[in-house]
Structure formats: structure tokens, C-alpha cells
Image (cartoon, rainbow, N blue to C red):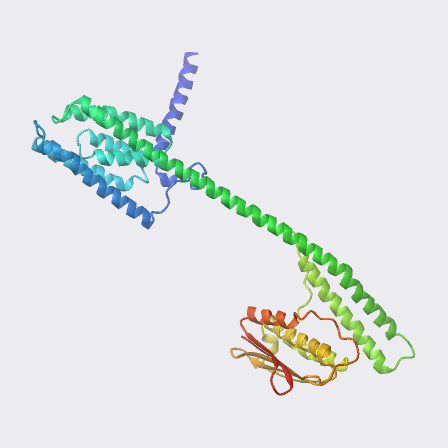
Length: 421
């Protein structure tokens, strides 16, 4: 039983020794992500250098102020050897303050030892004690504060300029004030750290709530687009296909019906791509997007528009259009597409002219021009939101280009875009 008790006692003392040695570890070796240690120092910043310099100079000035009465006003002055020792120990204590962030307990204990032979080390010891209270838990702080009493008594025995009672009465209030200030700074830092963590958590929760609301809105929009637009376009494709197989149709009408069916099918594919983007959710594999148009698809778009009865004069002079960036080709295609749609809506029967020119390193220019209609048609106009040109303006601005649209004074309506390449 005695051997077992001895082993247990040895284990307890070993753990306590490791705990106290851990307090002597450099502060920079502690885990920086520990929420209980928000004041763990990192690389010394400009503000830290300023504070350390001010602390060093303050310790030197106060140390000299404490030493002056012992040199001049005391009935039993210090000997020359004691003065040299006092100044040397005070200088070492002041210099040790540069390492108080990394070794707070070690610097505080070193200042205690030096303070037993130097009154000029008192200010540096108080600053080291304050730093210890900022960077360490209360237990090592209380230990260092308790060691101040024997250190002060040792100085009273060593120095002929004072007595133990006076030293204790002066040292205790100073030590308590230093500890109180350090603990106040530590508590304030922990409070700010906690508030910062709460603010970051609140921002994260707010972003999550906004993402959830956005996803719900996108899902609602996708559902409405699928239920309304997809159904209508599918009916249009179905009726066009039924019209196409009628045996008594002229070739022109059959060709128009085929064009309607192909256009409706293409619109359905693009609509499914948009709906797929709206319904994408984090952590879920996204559906493959529909092929995006490029510069090489613009002639096909012009040909489809001509088959619908529009008169379009088209010219495309682009060096190596297949080498153009996909984003550039899609923007140019959408500009031509929206401009031709506006011609069909607002200037039916008028001739249009499309010019696409450019090359790499010189930019791409897209120009669509048509004559303004002299009279309105009796047929009902196609519905429109008026946001098509606004959308083009935003698209070109995002690409870093410029867009000009409107009447040019000669009776033509012009859409002229310049895109970087």
C-alpha cells in the first residue's frame, strides 16, 4: 500500500510540475485558435512595437525616479558597489520587458529576482506583473504576487536605505494595482473576443438565412417557369408539329411550321437550362447546362430569322471566330438575338442590317440597324417588358464594353456594341 501511495503521489506531483512548466512556455506556442486565450500574441505589429517601446522607456524613467531618493535623501546612502549592482539589475529588468509577451511568467520571475537587489527594477517588475496578468490565468499571477513579499523583504535586508515594514506597505498596494489593471485588460480582451465571435456567428447565420430565402425564391421562380412557360412552349411545338404533317400544305407553310417547331424545341432546351440553374442546391451535382451560343452560331440565327420572313442584310468579318472566348461569343449572340427580336416586335416589315466585325486584341463590334416604321400595324403587338435593351446594357457593362442604342437622326434605329477581346 505504501508503494501504491508513493506512485500516486509521484504522478500527482508530476502532473502539477508539468502544469506549472506549461505556464513558463512561450505564449506564441499556445494554440492560437483556443477561444479561452483570445490574447495569444502573434507576430509583433507596429502597435505592439509602440507599446513595448513606451513601456520600456516608462520603466527606465520610473526606475531612475525610484533610485534618486536612495542616492540623495537617505541618511545611509548606498555604497558605490550597491549603486552599480542596482543600476545593472534595473537595466536587465527593463531589457527583459521586450520578451514579456513571449515569456510573461519567466520575465515576471526574473524581475522579482533582480528586484531583490535593485530598487530601480521595481517599475519593470510591476509592468512584467501586469503583462503576466494579461496573458496568463490567475493562478501564476497570484504566485508571482505572493513572491513579491519575500523579494521586497530581501531588498529591505540588502539595502540600508529602507526597512521591511516600509517596503511591504509600499509594495503591496503597487502589486495589487498592477494585478488589477492586468486582469481588467484581460477581461476586456476576452469580452471583445466573445462579442466578435458572436458578431461573426450572427453574420454567418444571417448569410445562411439569406441563402435559404434566395434558394426558396429561386425554386418558386423555377416552378412557375416550368408550369407556365414550359407548358405553353410545349403546346406551341405540338401544334407546329401537327401542322407540319398536314398533307395539303404549301411548301412555304410547311417550312414555317417546321421553323416554329424547331424554335419551340430550342426554347424548351434553353428554358430547361435556366430552370436547372435556378434549382441548383449546394452539395448536389448540377445538371449539365445546355450548349451556349458562340460567334459561329450568329449566321444560323440570321438564317432562322430570314426563314421567318424578315429581311436581314448580314455581314460578318471576324478573324478566327472559333477562337473567340465563350463569354464574348455568347454576349455577341445575345445582342444580335435581342436586336432582331425588337425588329420583329416594333418594326415588322422593315429591312435590317447586321454587322459583326473584329479580331483578337482589337475588340469586337456588333452593329444592328433597321429603319423606323412609318406606320403601326393593325395586328396586335407582341407583349414586351421593355427590359431587353436594359439587359443588354447590363450584359455589355459586365463584359467591360460599351453599348449605344436609339434613333440616329437619319430614320434608323441603331444598336451598336463594342466588346473587349
